[in-house]
Amino acid sequence: MDEALNFLRKNLQRESELEEEDLQKFALSLSILNFLKASSLQPQMMKYMRNKNSLFRQILINEEQHSSPMISSMPIDIENSFLGREMNCLLEAISGIECVQPYGDVSYRLISKIADVLTNSNTCQVFRISNITDDPMQDMYRFQKEIYRQRKQYEKDYWIDVPPKYFDSFDAYQLQHHIDQHYIFTQSNGVALIKMFLASKVEKNEEMLRFVADPQLNEQQMFNPEGSRRGLDSEVHEQAQFFE
Picture (tube, rainbow, N blue to C red):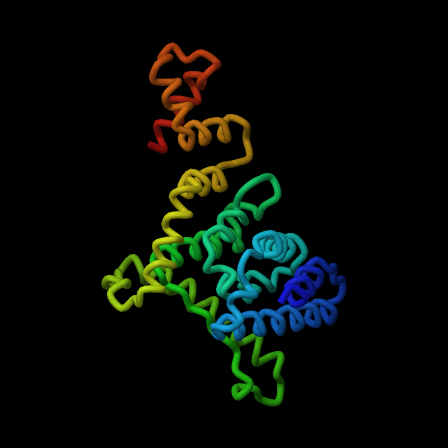
């Protein structure tokens, strides 16, 4: 599993100057992705796909930074494999200095996936060999493009027709896993992390969002309403009210 992930990481980092090279690069990435998705459907393989946070983040960063515009319509959606069902993995990809950029295709997919995990709406569509025609790569391109189109349509439709209670059919393991992901999200200040990720990388915004996320800063402001530098200056405090 580590070899497959490292191959994908290195392949996505490769710069391709010619269209033919780009298609070869994309074909290899899709083939590895399909292996990861197929593995995600096999319970015995899931233990080998846990705790891959660093590789997961680097793969997404490489996809974003080194891919041609074709990737925006046919993404390497590794987040829809089992790797993307772990909240720690998803949050780490949008946290810290080295992370994907906000307001792009990759960040859109990640934030959508975080919502999926919280609502247990996980889908992992695998390209089947039985669907191959005379041009296997074009078949795979069409498949990948179609599932991303469906994904975006699902996001639009969800808010129009909200599904019924999704946890009614859970068994004990599924329910506990779902509870664990909610716990990780809340304990990691997930909402504040997403706010910080979407805010521009400006010092004032980062300070403002730390204020929202850190209860100690809130307490300092409460007991120091004059706004000394132990807490937050008044301008940043006013902006922080927008997020409360």
